[in-house]
Length: 347
Image 1 (cartoon, rainbow, N blue to C red):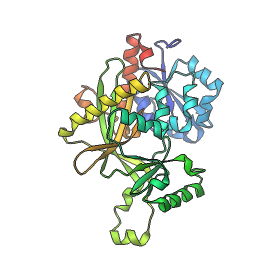
Image 2 (spheres, rainbow, N blue to C red):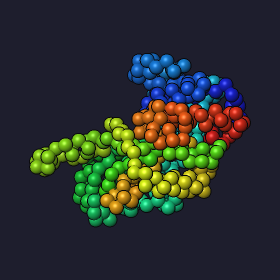
Image 3 (cartoon, rainbow, N blue to C red):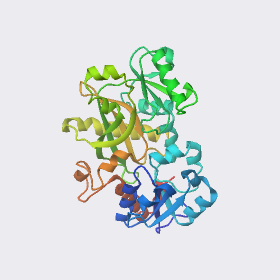
Image 4 (cartoon, rainbow, N blue to C red):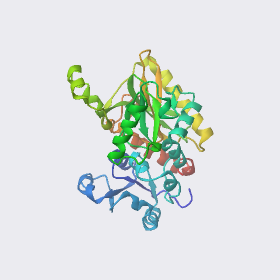
């Protein structure tokens, strides 16, 4: 990447998993920079591994030429996470002059549900059926917003009327303007599992660094209410993610886990050059037969990796030192610097 040397700063937005990212960067010897909204400055001032806090009124200021020029002059590499792609459109990300770790072109495929489905199917993953319109809903389905929404706005539908009812509520709460902003998918029943991978563009190897499941409000909380009271309340479940829970799989399931990760990176390399570089997550459920059904992927670091700042039961099988996903990203950048191969890990 032209203009990038060894004296680098690692930067990210102050949200999502920024603490893990910058702690990992500092552990690998990099200068660290946080783009932080004013309302959160007091939080991030507590952490000494953050060398510089760049205060902004809104994360959208990252698009300003003056902001980008300052970051480029500081030899900055920005690490994308969920907030990054939630605040910026695919077009805006692709036009950034700041070097981005990973493949910034793949975020368009993460944000667009049809493209997402295409990539998962090309990888040979078992995926729920995509439902073209509300008139085709003939069984339990889940309705989702496009992009990284952290589960916000999701709802269940089982026919046209339940879909229309859900849409009406989202419009009322100004979450959407029309039903055209929604994606309908056959509901996959089972244990939710989130597989945290890292693919090295340097070594061409895939690593499983952790596994988690999400705690969602208030669909998980509803399970604490007895069935009789649930029926009396007639409470609508929501899927807003409030936290993550660590998970270790049966070892007999791991061959399929690695196979899915490898197939996904091969499909990404074919459809979205230069492919899936760095962290990604394959998200789905294990059904009653122990088969994995993939309903999502995230083409960047996910918040579930925050569970493992000192490494997970899986990362310790690869590394003889604490290795979070944030530190693994910084380690890849360091190796790329040493091999004069930053072009392989940045776009």
